[in-house]
Image (tube, rainbow, N blue to C red; front, top):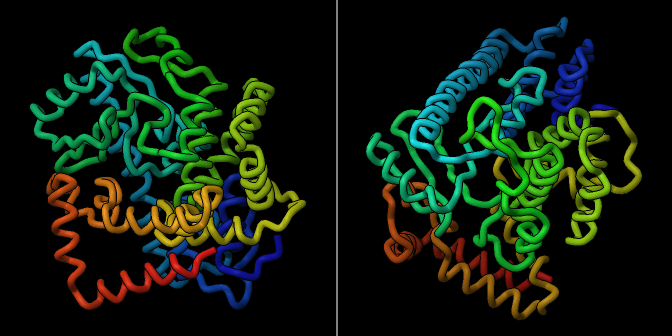
Length: 379
């Protein structure tokens, strides 16, 4: 890859760290601070630092020190989250609650070092019949507990990592085209077996862990975009587990539920960035979406993708639905737009009321008019 932009140099630094290679010196016209900020935004700056410290011409001392602190923070964060995870596992085991896992806590074990794969929360899968008991346990320990959906819980410690308890790989929150995901794979415990050392810990078979991880990344990309860290996860999954899964079964699921074109596009981008393979198709929009998404997606990508998904039902219906969802948003959409509502545990009615009052501000009225204008002009 010829380096012309800051993001390309960031990818190069990550590539060299992954392969223990000496990185090229920063090209003229590339700004170290831009590379650092982009790495932080996508939660891969810690990996890039391992290459930066090998450069002959390093960033200025202030920026280098800040980058180094960011790397050490990722190491400390991993250690703290591991301690939190072990305490959580002990609590579930002592209370005879069956659980399994399929997201960051597993994926980070596939990386060369677990702290390379930064993690925002701890996700566990439990039986739906255990949710009430878990809610009581977490509440008794002083955690703030919220019903994320009917069959999920979000747990917020005063100081520490958010915990999400799921009962399926993919929940009913994702309607319409997102039902493809639950159709392709669900019922986690039917694809898992008890761990030999802990009867309450169940371990997913490699094929279904790989399939779920791949679909989880695709879901993020389809919903509101996904960042560099998710594309790096694809590389790790492919290189560490690609020869250990039932590829025929996975390919059939991808084909049956119309995931193959997007999966191929994302793997093509992963190959270009992290394996040095030349792309066979135009990856411009895919790469731009990844870069614009940051680590958790972007609102404008969500809007655009929503209209695209609904276009099969007719543009007019799609636009009406967008207007309706804007006027009467779901609780999760309200929480995403106003994190303070989630923190205070507001109901959907209270959240809509406070949002309406907030929207009387001139700046918000202007933003709403712009929003409806974009929907009217969209195709």
